Each structure stands twice: as structure tokens, then as C-alpha cells.
Figure 1 (tube, chains in turn cyan, orange, yellow, purple):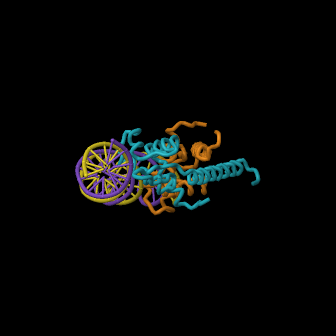
Figure 2 (cartoon, rainbow over the protein chains, first blue to last red):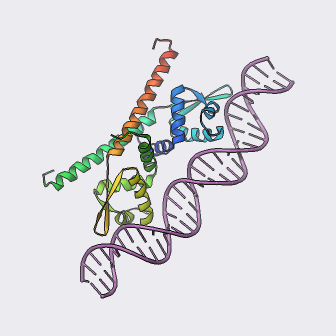
Length: 110
Length: 110
DNA sequence: TTGATGTGCAACTATGTAGTTGCATTTTAA
DNA sequence: TTAAAATGCAACTACATAGTTGCACATCAA
């Protein structure tokens, strides 16, 4: 699992947008879908959808296969799992820190 | 645990910025810290730090206690845990979907 | 071959975000 | 009481982002 900060940064940026999360859900639900089909389901233009897909692709969250004149996008779960693990780990760190501070405040030994 | 979409959205937006992640790390490391102290450690101005703290506060990731003329910020792990769980769950959905598609492609029964 | 469908590229606009500076207000401590 | 230290508020700039439109190019199917 690739765990560098750049990956996490790109995934977080990609997910921090409701339009992109909606697009991801559509792709995940259909399995494979083109930008044109996506643009029909969402309220924004095909070009706007493609820009979002570029961001998602750069984050490693989707991939596009060329089939004839179509480009069919599908979802890649790995980077999402990596980022979820990163976040879970950070959350645990904070919890431990708070427990430690609480113990110090109560005068108990660490 | 509060699991509505608005919370997840705000947390993702808050985390999708390296300056804010750095600030969070500083706060978590120190336990409690003021905006002025933070501004000394980072390369940006106190006002910029305060704007980041406002975003983090709105996402429920930090809280500020007024003590005399100071405002000491500390970290709140809960919303981070909620968002990590949301992401983990989404990742599992995608995995299941892909396994299902693979089985269909192999002609096995679902 | 030709019209229809799908993609790719570029220019443009509008709005949001990150950051700055300046100054007023509050609080501490000598 | 007064200077220093911390916060709060507001205006301003620069740049990134989200979205649009228009048109050219590629591909399928009748």
C-alpha cells in the first residue's frame, strides 16, 4: 500500500467536493460509465464532468478504458482504502494523546 | 455518532489543505496551543492561521477555550473518526461491487 | 459516404479560497 | 496607570477552482 502524503492529499482534495462524490457514486453504482452518460445524470455539462474525472483520475480513484470512440470510467478502491487507513490512524493518535493528557491532569502515572 | 453528509463534507474540506493538516498536527502534538503560538511555528500570518482554525472549528475538528486574554485550541477526535468510518465503508462498497462484477464476467452465479 | 454520436482542446467568466496588512479592543503585569 | 501582548474585525490582493461555450476531430452505423 502506497502511503505517501501526496496520495492522501490528492484523494482528500478529490473527495472534498460534492459533485465529485456524486460522480463517484454514479460510477460505482453502474460499474462502468462514460462522461457523456454521467453528464446526463448530473446537472453540469460534459466538460465540467470531464474536469472532475481528471481530478479523480489524478488521485487514483478512477480509471478510464478506451473502447472504440467511448471512454468508460470505473472506480479504483485502493487509494480510498489507503486514505481511510491514514485517517483512522490519525484519529487513534488524537485519542491516545487526549487520554494521556487526561491522565496527567488526574495526577496518575503514565 | 453523527453520520450526516454535511459533517463529512466539512471534515473533508478542512483536511484537504496541507496548511490545515499541519496546524492540526501542531495542536495535537502540543495538546493546547494559541493562534499566536501557531503562527510562530508556521510560515503564514496569525490572521491566516485564525481563518484555518475557523474552518477546522466549523468542521468540529478543534475547539477553542478562552482563558484570560488567550484562546487555547485543542483537537476533537470524534468527527475525524466519523469521517474515517464513512470512508472505510465507501471503500468496502466499492470492493464488493468490483468482486460482484468480476464474478459476473467469469459467468459464476451471484 | 454521410450524418450522428462521442471525445478532445481552448478560451473565457465568475466565484471561492488563501493570504496579507492595518487598526481597534482587551487583558496582563510592572 | 501604562506599556506590552493577545485577540478581533475589516478591507484588500492574488490565485485556484468550477463551470460554461464553441469548435475540431474521431468513430460508428445506415
